[in-house]
Length: 314
Length: 265
Image: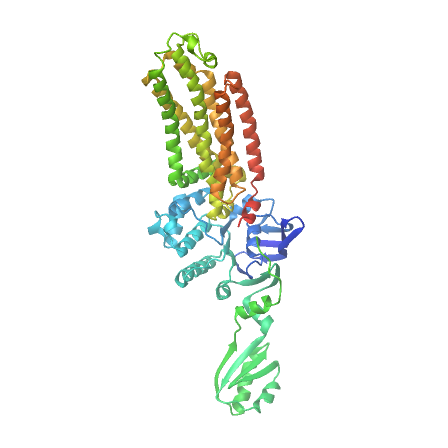
């Protein structure tokens, strides 16, 4: 659905001053995939979305979006993608219905009224359809902007910070809606600072800061950055048990934290029974066994924590 | 064409909710009709009788406006009408400036330009829609004002020779052709300014500079430097057409989606 090769955007701020916003982005997003594009402010995420929606042209590199080459079939790209911009940008003096009607016509939607009604009802805004958008809360505007992005049933949806600045209730509603879109098999390219949200919603994550640093499923990123770790809660720990456990095959590391043992291994499915057997034979009281799950935030911080200069994104 | 009408519909729905725009659209044309009608009425009342039949009392500058069947009073009225007709040409300049200046800058300030540019609309369609949305009300206001002026004149006792002078080719061209061309120039200049600045008020103030040439023509005529006749009007229309073409070309070429999206803070 999205294929980019060495996509680069350099902004010329003034003569002799170039700011690279996106450098050599090579990426492949499959149809039906929810792709999370994560990075700090000014990393070039919005610039990437703007390039992929043909709002701005890349400096170098190529891309195909929905099968259309960027720079050659820009109208076709715009017709096939929907975008939720960072700021909803609605016409505040016009009603919600009028706002969506305008966009439905610009997207050449056949059943304008039907589509507008469908999405206003779907996002719970139908009762407020005749009210000016200026009277809407931030959450309602965001929902309306999501309606706008979906009116023409795009094959690919770009969401730039979909829950940014929303209260927990509104954010939950938007997240649930994204999950619903995901279940419909829509392809979604999403920028977010909410790492839990990305972890929950996205099939794959791209960690980005001007360059694409890592791209994989969040589970694979966890294994790559921290390995797989088993946590065993015991009533008490006898230090004599540790050499016995260390001798087991595929145990990479063992550490003790109070009455818990943290064991690093690549193969917990096969190792766990052996560990428990060894501990029980040695007289240990095993209370709980589980896998230590590092958060995406830890991976993000480790990746972005390196002292890289922040770039101001135009 | 469908996209252009959608933009026009959007612009009108939005812009006519601004009280200032409505005030400009209604008050200025009414004022520019009422002012000459009142002046002509007062001229007819106070001067018509005194100088009737005595051309020797007319200044030489006024004599050039006299047709064979006119009285000196008629000549005076024609002289005044020549001044006021330029005001009718100002209507299509003043009105669209307010609408067009808000057009792009307004979208920038509400951040609605990005989602709009993300639709399959072309730059030409977007600019044409915005231009027409600003120009059509201005052109209609100019024509309606002229129509009201024509209706009011016989009611205040303006003579048939004076009426014939007003509906002569020179002034019909001025109102029906030069006016719309001036509106197009004003709109495109305003859109050009609007896409380069970030504050609607700045855009409006710069765009209002377009009135300067019209005022210059008004004062030049008052001073007797120029006399607007058919030849002058044709030259003026020709020049305006060239200016319009230049401004439209400049407007489309300078409206860079990328620059507007990325340079604005």
